[in-house]
Structure formats: structure tokens, C-alpha cells
Image: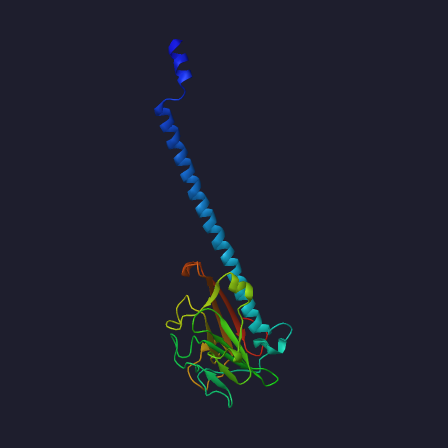
Amino acid sequence: MRNQKRHTAAGFTLLEMLTTAAILAIVFGLLAIIFSRATTLHRVVRSGGDAENFGIYVANTILYGPGASWEQGLLAAAEVVNPAATLPAGLALSPKVPSNYGSSPYNPNPYLIFRTMSGDYLIYKLKDDGTTILRARGNNFDETDETTYIDLKPGWASDRQLDLFFDETAPASVVSSGFYYYTKDSNGAPTPITSASDPVYYVKMRFVLRNILQSDQEAVVIERHVRVRNQILF
């Protein structure tokens, strides 16, 4: 009885205190790991949602035109310019349309150019720095002259440090955006263009989006396949 009273009065022993401290350290360490992983997961999910919204916004602007201007959409285009062909008279582009750029001739390409029913040309160009896509209407486009185009990246995408990624050194890479051009074979199936004389019947748009914190594996990919002059996606 005397020993029990002495132990109670003295409080915890040194060994008990060390054991308790070790247990608390393990518990707080596990909580820190869980919190870190939860924060990372939230960041990836939030970034993925924002990136997807950015890609959908760009794709819809190209397909249906900006705002209510449906006649400026790719789905209403009178003609899509073959990147292998000589540019229409009066159309000046800088940099020039690359003729042999990706894994196959002319595909993928940083440019999408089409003529509207009213005769205007609309030019979309993946910016060389791999951050956004530019839009021009008319006959002149110069990537070094901001007065000749509009940057399609909205303010909220810039605030969230989102990029529409384009790798001009490896455009056919799975982590690079690009435009793909197709004609059709004798059975009407899409086949990549190979010459300037091939009419463009189909276009594939591929957009790879991510923010500066995301890796290639975390990037969001948006693809749209369009049959020219026919509002049916395939």
C-alpha cells in the first residue's frame, strides 16, 4: 500500500512518459502523411476539373464560334485549308504553316485555318511557348504581333496557371496538343492527308491541359473529331 501511494504521488515514471511521447509522435506523423496526401489529391482533382473546363471552352469556341456567332464555328465552315496546300491568295501567316511536322506528313499541326460561309478566314494557332491557343480573323496573323490575334485563354485559367500544352520540338508526343487532318479513302473512311491535293474531310482537335504543378501523367486530354461541313461528330 505504501509503494502504491508513493507511485501515485510521484506521477508518471520516465519510461511511461517516453512511451507516451513515442506513441504521440507516431500518431501525429501518420496524421501529417494523411493530410499531405489529402491535400495533394484535392489539388489534383481541382486542377483536373479546371483544366477540363478550359479545354471544353476552347473546343466549343472553335466548333460553335465565340458567343452566338455560330457562323464562325468549324461546324459551319465552308472549307478547311489543307496545311499541305499553298495558302489562299492574300493570307499571310507568321510563322508559316509547317509542311512536315509530326509522325506523318502535316499531322499533327499547330494551325487550324478555315473559311466561313461569309468568306472570312479564321485562324487558330497553338502558341510556340506551349501555354495557350491564339485566334485571328482575317488575312493576317503574326505570332509576334499581339494586335493580329486574340489569346483564347480566359482570365480564370491564367489565375489558376493553366496551360494548353504544345511541344513544338515533339508535336506527335502523347503530351502535346495538335490538329490532325484527314481526307477519306474509297470507302469513305478517314485517312491522313498526304498531299496538297487531298481535300480535308475530317479534323481532329487534341488539347492537352495542365497547370504548372501537374505532371504529364496528371494532364487532362480533350479530343474532338469533326466532319467538315456536316454537324455530325464521329
